[in-house]
Every structure is written in C-alpha cells, then in structure tokens.
Length: 219
Image (cartoon, rainbow, N blue to C red):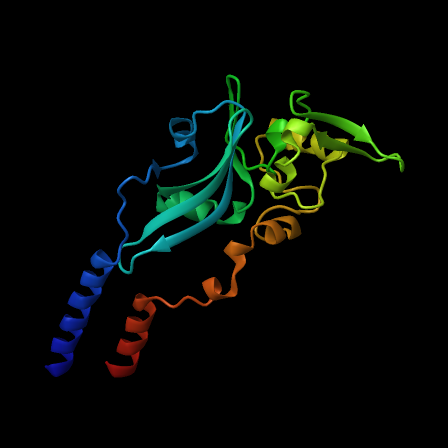
C-alpha cells in the first residue's frame, strides 16, 4: 500500500514539474515543418542554417531549434523557434546544413551545405584561380565575412563541389559534401558549431529515466 501511495505522489510531482519547468513559449515562433520557413524568414537572398536543437520538459517535451539566418542584403541573426517533434527528429542529421534558402521567387527546402545559395551568383562573388591552378569560390569584399558566418572555416568550394551539389539538387536529394564534411558527423560542422557537440549534452539524464530506474529497483 505504501509503495502505491509513493508511486502516486511521485507521478503527481513528475507531472507538476513537467508543466512548471517547461519554458514560456511567448514570443517564440512555431515551425511545424520546412514549408513554414517563408512565413518566418522574409528577406530575399536569405538562408537558414540549423546550428542547434534541443528538447525541454519531462513528460511532455517541447522541441526547439536554433538557426543562423543570413540575408544577402540585410544582416546576420540567430533565431530560436519551437518546432514539431517530427521535424526536430528528422533534422538531427542535418545540424550545420542550410534547411531553407530563398532567392528572388525561388525557395529551396533541401538540406544543403551552408552558403550553397550564393555559389555561382556574381552579385556575391566569383570563381578565382590561385597560383597553384586551383579554382575556388571567393566572396566579394562586401561579403568577405560570409565564410565565417557560414561556418566554412578554411573550406572553400570548388567547381566540382558546386556541380555535384547541383546534381543532388536536381534529384531532390540532400547533399553533405563530397566526403560528408557537413552534418553531425562532418568535420567542418563539428568544428564550426561546437555547441551542439558539447560533452555534457551527451550525458544529460532526464527525470523520466530516473523514475523508470527507481521503479525497476523497488517494485
């Protein structure tokens, strides 16, 4: 009888904590899926790079994603949105990729390496050939900080990268780079967006797990 009473008390406390500790959603926009991006991101020549994702709450979880939004003619900002469980889970493998890009009347929803929107667009830069004969994409002076914003590090796309990306796009397939440099297992993404790969995130223990372990030991 005592165990049943204790179980009831724990469950009531559990539900109360789930509600009390869930953060306020006031002012946070909701992104159900990729088709909702145009309602949130209005700028032209814009791209949204997924840089972090997490869930809050115990029994009832709320899912959030963090984006770096770059607008070609405006600014760079970081945006946190609430999203559906399905969309959050689906894009765990797309950390560090651009999930949305808008150029004039064209909207792209395929996961692609950040900055794909600007490649080949002479408004933003041009293909250069260095002394060793290697051709690469170089942003113009007005956009010289874009490699940093995009999380490229020392990486610079070459024409082969560009053509392969276009081939994947024509087949409506995500593209992670010729050697999977982008995404949660990619070296470029891991280096550029380290907050997602912090060790303490991987060791997080939830109240739900603790309760399950307790009841296994005591009932």
